[in-house]
Image (cartoon, rainbow, N blue to C red):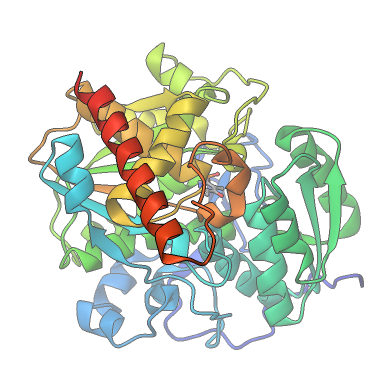
Length: 437
Ligand SMILES: *Cc1c(COP(=O)(O)O)cnc(C)c1O
């Protein structure tokens, strides 16, 4: 790993660049677009600022549709200057109408935004990393890094390989095997830390200060987090340039939730979609639900917790954007709910059995919360509801091991097959009778 020069853009600024710098979300102080993420005056988080009047002049539905079939069709809304951002086909994942799941739950218009099949590493994190590494390259970093709950490490390692950047990632040492393997395969340096994500994150803040690396979710966080806006843009475009009535999304740091909101608002601001109220509901695992607790208790501050849940990818005990997520859920008349580990497993199975989508624990959490909200009357059956599925089940196989039955093992003989089939039908009937009585 080599040292980095923190010089400014190597690439020529594009004529379509609308981002003007960074701005403190709390006190509004403006900063140059460098690798910084905290306000020097009030310690508030920095966010990317744009010239929206310029954007409304140059961007139309047609210019977007003429762009690539990836997040980069929205490049004008993203904080990069390169004409050639790192494009590994991230984004434009399917928006599926989920009729069978909707019927099962008793609602009418349900859509799944399926980032379980995002490219290249099968989670929504490919969006934020594509943006962060493009910006890292522009800022002259040659080594990139992250503090990860699993998916971010997969994505950072993969996209760094594609871009020819050196990579060192930090993960908690107790992650699922699929997440660890899905990072190691790309050949980065992997630091497995004895500790939870919040401890990993604290360590990384120190490394970021001393090594001059580009940490996608620390010193590059303002750019990184903007990548999640594309989850809002794509849904609006895929619904035929309309906003939904209600969205349900998982919450870890709370970033993706707040950025879907920012994405919808920006599309309204520049005239790409008509304004309308969208309700924002968030999902957490009970074993790590500091944002849901704050929402439930009507607090405007987060009390950190120590995570203990199978939903490791969203197990952040001290969520950076928690207060903003609570604020959005409250002001949009949404909700933030939590579900226990057994409900998360049921959520994974329900989505697989009704829609043919195998999601990881974060998706199981979101589906279980969706079900809970419908049952509590907190989702109107007539609302157009979009559920964000953010990761792939093949990476967290441990979570469902022992809950999904087993194959019928038989001899290669027709009568063995017939007997096994009869036995399985009898079993099905028995199960069915148990459900009925
Ligand atoms: C990281 C992650 C999230 C949550 O991201 P935040 O922006 O930190 O709230 C949700 N789902 C999956 C699968 C993730 O990996």
